[in-house]
Amino acid sequence: MSFGKRGSLFGDDAAIKTDPNDFDPETAERDNEREIDKLAERASMLKRITMDIHDEAERHNSFLDQMQGTMENARNLLAGTMDKFAKVFETKAGKNMVYLISGIVVFVMFIYFAL
Image (cartoon, one colour):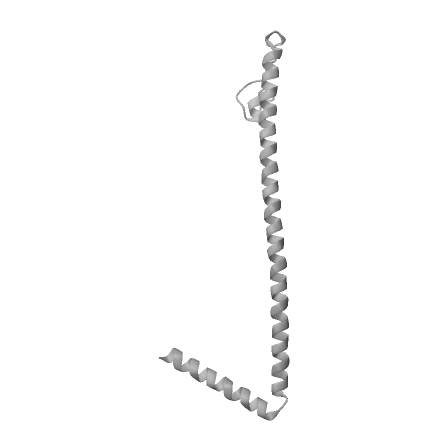
């Protein structure tokens, strides 16, 4: 890598002027202004990208909060259902009813998939 070439460091084809007689302050100032403008453009692009990432993260957090509430409701519903099943299984008649209903469901599913 040549350290005397600007292109090898910054990706441009212009070489750094090393001869003091060829130095033009106005040209150097224009080059600096152009590079500053490019840097400002890149900085604003990065700012837009980071703001988009932030907005996306906020939307995902909101979605996860909603999902947590939905899952909590489903857990409560399932816990209530399990409590009702426990009450049904406490008696012999309840156990027989569950077995009968389960058998009917299995039979209907067998008929459905067999035909």
